[in-house]
Amino acid sequence: MKYALITGAAGGLAGACVEKLSEDKNYIIFAADIAKQGLDELRERTNERVIPVVLDITSNESCEAAAEFIREFSGKLDVLVNAAGIHTMASLVEGNITSVMEKMLSINVMGMIRLNKVMFPLIKAGGGRIINFSSECGWEKPQPFNAPYAITKYAVEAYTMGLRRELNFIGIDVVKIQPGSFKTGMHNQAADGYRKLLESTEYYKPVLTVLKPLMSTALAHPHDKKYLVDTVMKAIYSPSPKTNYKSKNTWYLAAIDPIPDKIIDAGYKALVGAGYKLMKKFGKVKD
Image (cartoon, rainbow, N blue to C red; front, side):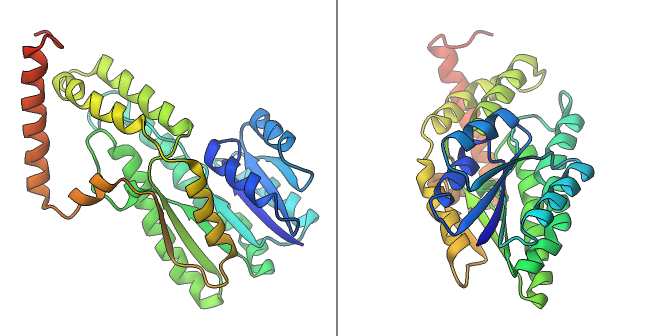
């Protein structure tokens, strides 16, 4: 029997991965999340090979308790998928940015580092592999007001590359997943953060007003999660996995990424200026 631990399992993407992997009778899946109700619902729509584990990845004690539970149950892990994470939109100079960043870093980065450290003996015992969720935001140039999330994913990129090169010496694969836009609770988090920023900003009302329709359009057209599930299954099952898997990255963000920074900066400024004038002309905003 093989054993997998998947974090963020009460969410849409990780939950879908649990559901797919649970179809394999050779796997027992430890489905981990801080949201017990979501885990119970996941268990109800899967089978007895899915074992809910209430886990707070920001807590050493919680991670250690989960590791002890798995150690007593199986003594090993064949796969650890770090899919837990949060997202919001925020200014880097307004509002409670320090609190926002501390929370995002504690979950998106330190939670991953903490859990991999605690679970490493089980991964080593199983000759397993570690799969870390990054994002397209981890390699693309940050978009305005999405920098807090990008910061955490840039950190995940560096951490995962460093971990891969370290564990390469002892024969343990480390894989990075870079998803594009998929319909998850993170979309709601992003939209809520943008709304709060627009309501409270002192400096960026015109900018945020112009960019809001663009953000809303992007959030309104997410990809089907089946594509990401397929990608994660490749990372799990491949005898020799790639170091990095992209999944439905946003084409237009990828297209502008090679453009020199000063040109991109000027383009954003010109777009906002022209857009705001048009919105005023047609009565969409008032002075």
